[in-house]
Length: 543
Image 1 (cartoon, rainbow, N blue to C red):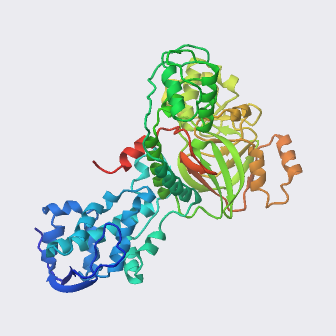
Image 2 (image 1 turned 180 degrees about the vertical axis):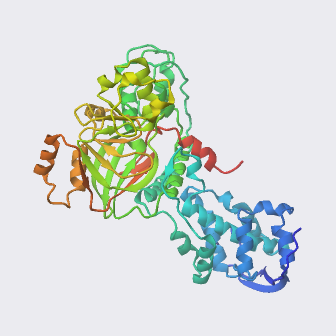
Image 3 (image 1 turned 90 degrees about the vertical axis):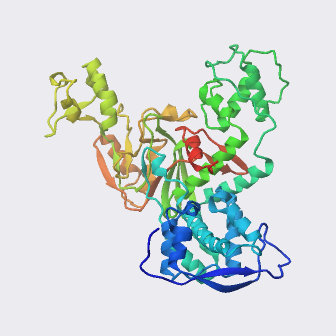
């Protein structure tokens, strides 16, 4: 055991049995009086709670922070006020309303200690004091920053993590005699988060488990009119989910029109490609149970604890799996646009930044990933690749390079800059909106505008293609009178690449959430990067 050089008095509480209130907090049997009866030296405190060889150390989540907190406060107890104790425990009892878990905050142990106060040993009550402090520190941290570290889940996470001083927050809560107020101050304030809390409550009211949940087996793609022995399971599952109301023929193997219509409605509701094809993505979404959807809500509440509390007064928010961009000003959504995002292989990253400028008639400098995975392999197959794609090659001095002079199997090929000039075939279209960032991600137009009619739009190489990108650019320049419609039209007709700074402050947030409340309906959308289950496995309480 460590030998401390100093000793401090630590006042330990003993809660004396007395009359109970007429109204008891569920699960808490409290006594009204406290008496300071013993002193505990730092030696005893370390031996009982802070010694690494002591088994009880495993009960604390924040051993160093708890130890430091009491040292800074001369080992004075802080939970001598009954209302404060009850206030904290009430929050722990109700923490599942936030998508967190009672057992993660010593809930069972605290409940047991509260219920046996009249028979607790002195050591038990010492433990109660310490556990309450440890619970507050952990609970405040989880509410403010999330239980998980998103940088360990996402390949790229560029949004700054929230910060909190749990010990300072606890000191203020004790000083103000208000635990509830202190915890409310760090909860997410986002409208989406509050709607998710409501959705969670409604979901639990109607039941998490299903009476039956048919699992559709894996198998080959089934097209309309084809036969498959999985059709019965598909029809049964659609019935359970409320999409199919006709009688079920257990002998039928044909993928009939009425079943196709039910599948299309399911696909539409979950932002899947509405094609009536029974592929792996549609089947996997149909196989998700109500309990799976409940977990999905918990996962999305956790995500909102990662996101910044202050998004700004004026911002663009990109919800990647929902394929939608919204412009919000003074808490009002003023514009929405359909978008296309990165594929599973080339994911659009999560990050936050600020709009810098707009480029009309943009050239396209090919980013490193596309250069490595597409351009150089394309050149190896066909030296005419560059002429067909209208791509120019430049060395480090800006001189053009003849494709036929390059050894495409050498490392030298990766050192060149590859650029496509402005024009109708340019994949950036006629405008791009830049928020300078290390990921080389931006918003842009596209010549392939018909793709916005598809429901599933994870088709880019990471950047965000925007439907009516010209309209969005016009909005961002609306505070600069000289860039009216006529001026922009002249710029576009000229074909010259033109850069215009955006003067109004507009933040950009790339977020990822797969559940939200739309009017009175909980909308579940396809988890395009397969992150929900991965996050749930880390979020759920230990067995």
